Image (tube, rainbow over all chains, first blue to last red; front, side, top):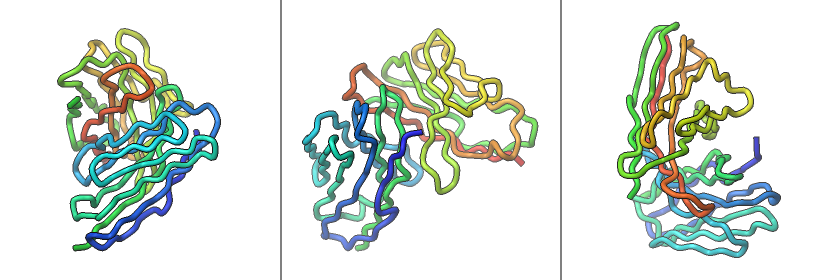
Length: 110
Length: 117
């Protein structure tokens, strides 16, 4: 079992504010780092798959960075909206097997 | 986009019953599918990798005789929880990759909540 940790476990954000949270993972035998958004009663939705150290990816108001040498990734949400409320999961990809963190649950208050 | 359908979404049954969960890739072929389990307040844990046309690969601590996996076609994998007991009550979810390569995400079903009485 690979140790993937996400922090914080939950956070509340005022609508319009920006926020970020972290995922830490083993820095050895790196294949890829995945981010998913999981809304209640839906299936996890893929946000990013990051493979290169220093990678930065963006999808609308959401972006992510990757540091494979120190074993962490940040997910940023700019100008949070109520529809951003979800649990955000990161997963360490070790030869196509995913080890998930416990997630960061984001609640955006109007 | 790639869609994965999982059925049923909810099962409530008596102890000793065997339960079959289906995972279908609707618009792509998947030689490999994955089965995860999530207990309350814990992370998704990989149970097994389902390989089309061959035996599944189980993670350490997962009983292959308890959790039977069949991947008979490129679009369907099934997980059967045999003689389920209350400790098997959990959330089970499947996923599949739509392509090869390290930059491919996994596409998930909606999950199955299993409750054994």
